[in-house]
Length: 187
Image 1 (cartoon, rainbow, N blue to C red):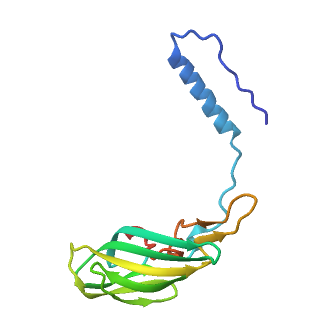
Image 2 (cartoon, rainbow, N blue to C red; image 1 turned 120 degrees about the horizontal axis):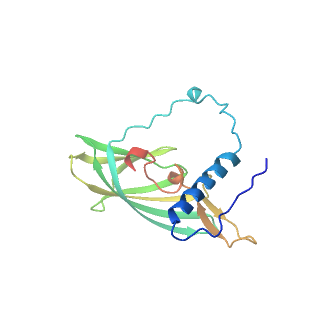
Image 3 (cartoon, rainbow, N blue to C red; image 1 turned 30 degrees about the vertical axis):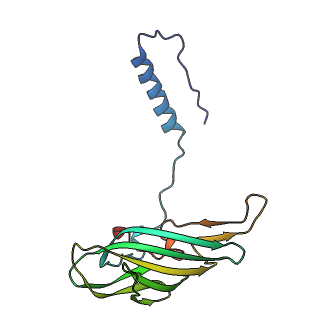
């Protein structure tokens, strides 16, 4: 299909709205006519598995992250100070996502160690007493990682770039290098 775009010449400057209207019309016609016809989607989206976000007991208000890297050894150390608030009464623990990182310690805002329960994919922080609604608190998670498979990459030097670290945190890969929540409703 061949299209010819016709331009306007020597239109009096007293009629800019006519030029704009004709130009807009030509652009719209060209855009609509030049778009290829797209086939309908073949995949039945209703057959996909239902994905349900886990509920959270806390609102994660702020993350303050400090990282140190050893590019040659492909390891990193981190510290994440998390400001959070309970979302209800009697909240005595909260769960955050932490995959491929090793949790070393968790501290309260006074610097006292908190109990924590790490797993392969998450970290449960246990508070010494339940948090009150409206109360905010800080917890600091100290951790390390060794060349994780997802979200965080140690890139060797090449012709295109120097030795470096790169990340791919979207949409939910940051927990491979930062302990945090990937629940969209509480980010």
